[in-house]
Amino acid sequence: MIDWGKYIVWRLLPVLLCVVAAAFWFNDVQDGGPYVLRNLVPLAILLLLSGLVLIRGRGQWTGAGSRLPLGLVGFAIPALGLELYLHYAYSVNLNDMFSDAEFPGRVFQYLPIYTTVAGGIGFAIGWIVGRNV
Image (cartoon, rainbow, N blue to C red):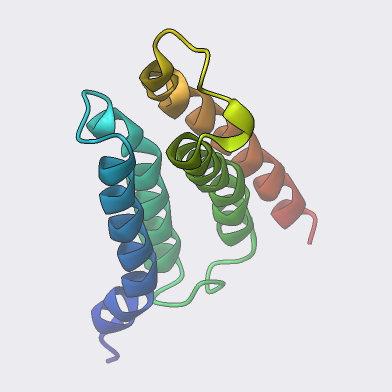
């Protein structure tokens, strides 16, 4: 009998390292503000979805078909991409985006909602595409 647990942990490790690195960077950009934990919710969802894909696939990314892996990619691109982009834009004040704002740090208050909804839409698109593959 093959132990799938070690394969799951081994394949989940890069995703976990990426999530941890992004979490530390989010904390650095926000200077430990009140919205750091809230902005980690999409990252936690990404990690949970990755674990679900690996568990369903018995340690393989595509072991249970294409629906979940494509849904995971569909979630990760808008959710993680939008989070990283807006944190980068805030950290370098991209095109003076935050110069004239009265409370520039409040962009992080509602950012997790936007990114989670965008990720959910991406997940649905990936799920539909995976069904038709």
